[in-house]
View: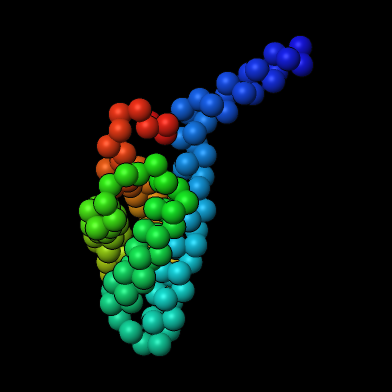
Length: 150
């Protein structure tokens, strides 16, 4: 029975689903730090009197630079595309979710009257999964068909 369990664990760890889950977890870890950087900058600027939308833009730019570095180095290391092309795709991916989060932030703050410190946190439940999918299947997509994560 012990050999069967070892074989099952070995096959499970080599499966594409397992690798996809591990990659998503790595993306999540990078995302936590990225989000901390973005929101620390956002909150500091808001509390310093900067308009919340401008603070959102500045935090976003800092977050994208951080996310690109760590996703390229740690999460999507199988990518073979050039750094400039990949950075443009990453920036575009984050740009899509940034625009979505900005619209949602505006609606939640202006029309629903949600606090400016709570609204961005709720928006993460939409933007994080969307961002992972955009980065995985477009920005960092390997040119090789046999990618180990697909």
